[in-house]
Image 1 (cartoon, one colour):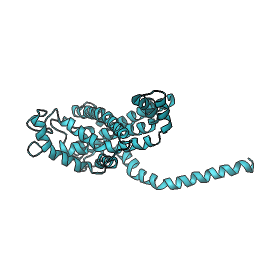
Image 2 (cartoon, helix red, strand yellow):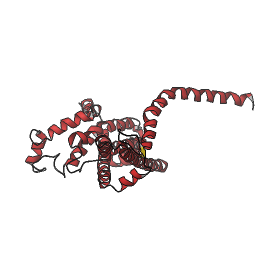
Image 3 (cartoon, rainbow, N blue to C red):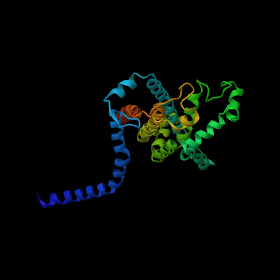
Image 4 (cartoon, rainbow, N blue to C red):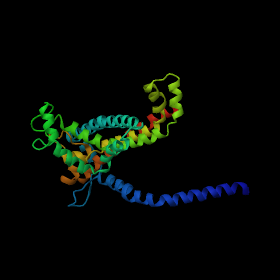
Length: 300
């Protein structure tokens, strides 16, 4: 090996070492607070543990039990329904707001801030506020809805049909501002010359958006889609505060079931098994999204 080839390799090794040194603090934190708890939860999912007695090895019994448990399947389909509605609605609404707020008009900064503000507020606090608004006795919003006949007299959150749409609406309202900001950042990077050229070629506003703007937002769309899906599959805060999983378990999601089984029933092994099923489910869906958007990028 000549001296000329050794020098670039030494520079690369120094850069790699420098990069690993900068990454080390974050990797240590991730290993301590993410990787280790995941491994520990995987071990607990194979045991019967309730904080009182030592963990007893049961193998795959917890998984066999949960796949035969109607409560698990109820929570699973509630989670799928929540994610199937909230994820696309949030993405489409965030993109529409980003396109609208990308133009110049008076009060644009105020509107942007107002839409983004709910994201920086604790979801628990937001859920409490919405619970008061929808309270059948003192809630102004609940009163307005009852006057037009949209809800039952017992209130939105106690109605088996309207409880899930209510927590979905809060989830969308909470997160749409954050995803809007991501799309706004992507719109700033779209060259104005391309849109102007398309306009001169006779493309209308929808054609310019579909054929020019949207393909150039593929990276932002993939990021928002993955983040929104993961957030939807992990829905817990507003459901716990607003409905506690009711009425009649209509809003109980997998995370709510994990909380109920693990921290209320003290069946930590069973709750850990549900959490690992949820982890695998989230991973599979995220990989499907990644492959889908990668193929779209290659096509464009």
